[in-house]
Image (cartoon, rainbow, N blue to C red; front, side, top):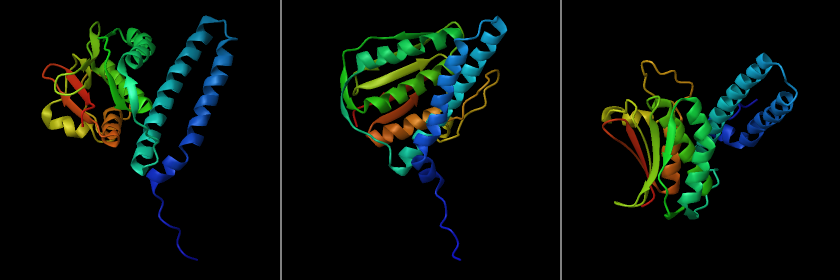
Length: 223
């Protein structure tokens, strides 16, 4: 009997991505039904912690599967004219509560700019960049989200955290690459910035890391 063909893990994950996401959707539904029946404070608290753990797991799985789809070339990408103002306002509005729980704020600078990009992929990028900024920003301070036109239209997400030295910036753009931070408990897989980098490449955009005090991520649409 001939040996089986080698398994390509990237293509495998890409092909089963839909099936792997379904259990998380079912767990959300069952958990919501359970929460509606809970009354005792301790039970409600435990259910809340379960929900947080579920959302962390779902987000990590989504990052892995999206990276696999991008690597296998099966990710659906369709560029169209996207008004940035409504998209940024929606995503920031949905993440305000998460920021508040971390003792931080998100400051959105309104914009009327429209760009040619994939709105679904840009949504993923924005969420990943804000989540990364919230992880490293100083408690009590804010994360800035806005758009800059000078030098080509670009989305900017900035925080006042420890930043990333130039010598280490290439590392954090690789899947699983992350820096050890004293006093910061990292629950992620180190995929957020790598995912944004891969999406930028797939869309023909640019991702740049900068800043001397904190981190400024520039997601440029000009290329």
